[in-house]
Amino acid sequence: MSRLFVLFLLVAVMAAGCDGGGGDGTGPGGKAGQVKAREVAIMYDMEEERRLQAAFDNGGQTWRGSAVDVAHAALIQYGVNVKTSDCSVVEEGDKRAVVAARANDSDIRIHLERLVKPGGIWTATKFEVFEGPGSRDGARTGSR
Image (cartoon, rainbow, N blue to C red; front, top):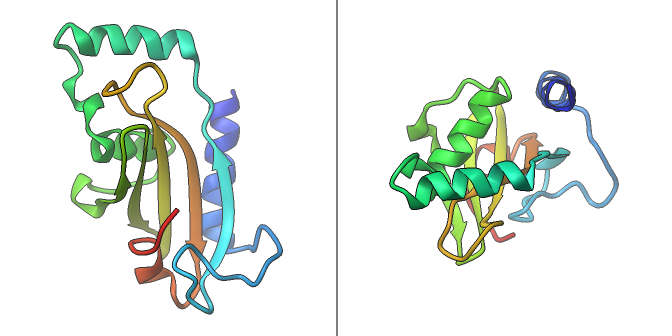
């Protein structure tokens, strides 16, 4: 049920283009006119993440080792219709990664973490949705 609520929020933000909050309205790249419309936390279950990590360690679900593939799967799961080729890595470190995607005239940044162990599977933990004149390039550049 909580995933359905998050999906509803994400779709509503993308459709309405509302501004979720204060500040100067610039996005991650600091471009004027780019508005961070909403930030949505993605709920996860650590027991399930441990189970998925064990499957990965045993040679299954190898796609979970790719930040782009996990970000793409999270977007699809929440009803955002994008292709894997529409997703690109903005940042990737040992513990955290950020993947950008473009959908429905919005730029989306998907934040991922390795929650179970170093070098393990990626888990999507948060979406950021950006809209406005600078959004086309803004989610693909800048830093976290």
